[in-house]
Each structure stands twice: as structure tokens, then as C-alpha cells.
Image (cartoon, rainbow, N blue to C red; front, side, top):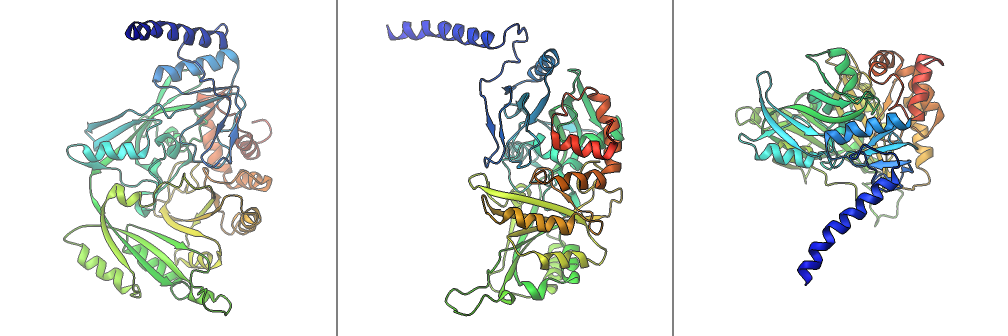
Length: 473
């Protein structure tokens, strides 16, 4: 009898589900564009709270097309979300919110130009992408990735996220092509071969071109990176030549500073910042023929301090050396500015910062809206990354102080799109001026694929573009 009941329940439940779906969406004939029924969405740390008119979680390309068609029928706008790690309000909307985390298919293919490429649907986490590439025969890897492997591929592309490997720039620069469902409901492929200018706009698109369906990266044979951790006396080591020397013999570096780390709680005297240490992580391609000579050069640039470590890891494990931060509630703020040839501005700003800090150096990119945009392929950008416990009452005052220093003609710094930047009105007007020329080029492409601004439902971006293009934009 139990088995009969279970069998009978299946069509009954299915019938009820379909009935509810149709009743929620009166006059709806596009079956795959059915909202989830959820009414709210929050990002990972609760800083962004969205109450859209409908939330969708598509699981196929047809779903994406139908959602766009439905939005067009209903006169709705669309914003997208992936892992939800961004703390800026890029996903904020009162209309349709499309969450792409159900799109996770990955395919590796042989390529006549790049040897191997990998195509991942928009919601694929980097951890899955790494796993597929690692298990491939031969084992493969991307050239650089973000530190956290929980991020989804469309999210890191849309905001121009980056890792710490200097020569690789932002992750978008490893793209071969990408497919986006635009406002017409069509799937448009962007690539350098088809149209380089449009590709450079699409590579960091902030969700303004449409819904990213898939991205294709060039990949390479798996390789190892030697990660070396070193502690230096902060005041003694932070000098332009030291930073330049270590960068020249590394594939990438990260510098961490924790305030008052030299303070001895058993010492009744006041904290002495001269005792503070900085933590330097540098990456070096592990090559049996070259490593001894190169590592000797690295050693010559540093002071040997007890506690240093050096470990060889496969590339993905080196990229994602920090476990996911999503279990912690923290505030995030990051800016970047071009490095002077003598590295003097880098040393100056490392010395200036007095909060929990992470520094990275990446190369420039031709992606128009990247905060490291520069036509000079040799230009380097200093990435200053600040982290604080979420809810710190002094956080806003602190980043406002830094904004006054860096958002000036002297540095022409730009914030990370996925971190805090849209909380102050003066930042909006500053970015309108700082990004004026790239925005003009970007807008020509954006308007072609979304002339009625279906995907432009974001006030901060609207204000930035209006300031750059004029009130009629």
C-alpha cells in the first residue's frame, strides 16, 4: 500500500506545482521563465539586500532567452547575481533578478590557436573549473585566478576581478570568447577575432550587455608555483628598490600588514610600530633548471628571518591559498593606481596605511571598464586591498579618508567594482571624470546591444555614465 501511495503522490504534487506556477504568472506562456517564489536576496555578508519583483534561477540557455523575452513583454529591467560576493550594489534592482548559480556545465576542447580552451557556464564556481581541468588528460590550468575559489566565472568577468600573478592581469584577459544573451533575446558571441573593440568592452561589462551565458578561457598544461612566505621588519624593508627587486624575480607578490603585530602584551611600554613586521608572499614558476638561480636572486634581496617558509603547489592551489572568506562578515574596499617606474609611490602608500592591508600588483588590461585599463601593456597597477570586521564604526570614516587621498589627479585611482565604492556621492562624480573616455567607447557598444537599457537598472552606474556622457545619455 505504501508503494501505491507514493506512486499516486507524484502526479498530484506535480499538478499542484504547475497550477501554482501558472497562477503566479497570469497570462504567462513562457514556461521556463518561472520565478522561484523567493521575494528577497542577500549577498554573502548581508550588506546588500534586494527585494526584486521576481527572482529567477535559470538552468539552461533557453531559460535565459525566455526570461529576457518575458522582461520585454512585461516592460521589466534585469540585473544578475552569481555567488553574491560583491559588496557593491551592482545586483540591486526592484525588477527582475537573475541568479545564474544553476548554470555550471564545463567543457574542455582542443583549439587550433590556443591548444586547449575550456568553456564554463556562467554559474560555474572556480573550484569546479579547477577540478575539471586538473582531472583532464593532460592536466590543465588557468594562468591566474582570484584568491577565493568559490567565486563564479561570470561574476569575476563582469567586475574585472583579478588574482596576484602580476603577468596575468585580470581574469578577463584570459578570455578567448564569451556568450551573452542580449536584450533582443539573441545569443551574441564576443571575441577578439570577431571584433576586438567590442570584446574589450564585453570583458568587464558590469552586467550592462545582458546575461552572460558562458565564457571560454585559454588554458595551459598544469604547472607548479613555489610560494615563499617571508616576514620583514616593515619600516626597514618598505623601500622602492626592495619592492621592485622582489617583483622582478617573482611571478607575483602579495604583501600583508596587520597593525600592531609587533606589540608585546607583556611589555607595559606603548606600542612601537618599528617592531611591526610585514608578511610577503611571492609566487615563482617552479622550473627545475631555473629555480636555483632565481631563488638565489630572491634571497639576495631579503633579510633572512626565522619562520620563513617555501612550498611548491600546483597552480590552482597556489592561486587559492586562502580558504573561503564567506564564513566571516567583513567589509571590503580596494583601489588601484598606476605604479611609478621607480616604485616610489608604492613604498609611500604602503607606509601610509595603518589598517589590515593586502597589496597586490597586476599588469594593465585593455578591457575598457577595468580599473586597470591602460593601452600600455607594460604598465603595472598597485592594488590596495583593505579588510575590516563588518560593522566597524570607524570603517566609513577611514575609507573616506583614503578616498580623499587616492581619488585625485595625483593617483587617478579607481575602486574595485565588486567591493565598496558606491556609498559616497563624491565617488560617483569622480568616476564620471576618471573613466570618461573609456565610458564613451564602452557606451557605443552597450547601446548597440541594449538600446532600451533593459540591463541598465542601476542608479550608481546610471549616474556615472550620465556624468561622463552628458545629461541626454
